[in-house]
Length: 153
Image (cartoon, rainbow, N blue to C red; front, side, top):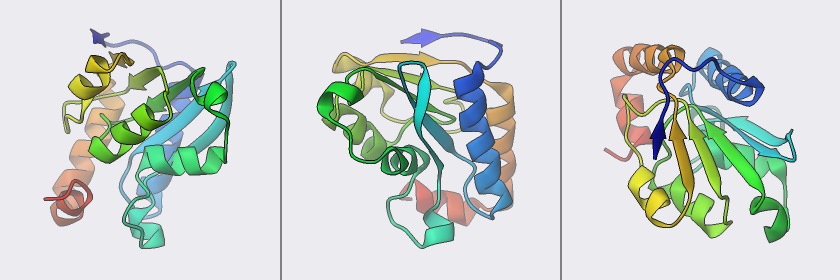
């Protein structure tokens, strides 16, 4: 697992952050994700559990849903960008579809299943993006009960 401090977000991480901001503006949980294949975004989304009354629409799941059905060969060439360390549900989906690389904006506010991902051969990079840390800390302070619900506590 690689950690990179203060790295300027690339256009894909910027798109994931834009999704997180959109979720926050909609009254939801500010977590965004994009799926990149051949240097193009094929799916983007944000946590929409609140907005859709959903049990499973975390940011990564929404991005995968919006990418539509893809053959395994496509997933195996993708990079998943997410603003927050992926939970066990999202990590399981990453493993199920064989996504080989995950770029995580931050894992300070929540540590997901990064060890599981790396133990299964996924290339995981954590960027420690301050904007994402600040946005999550603000959200958790404002709506702790909603945050706890999202992470199953």
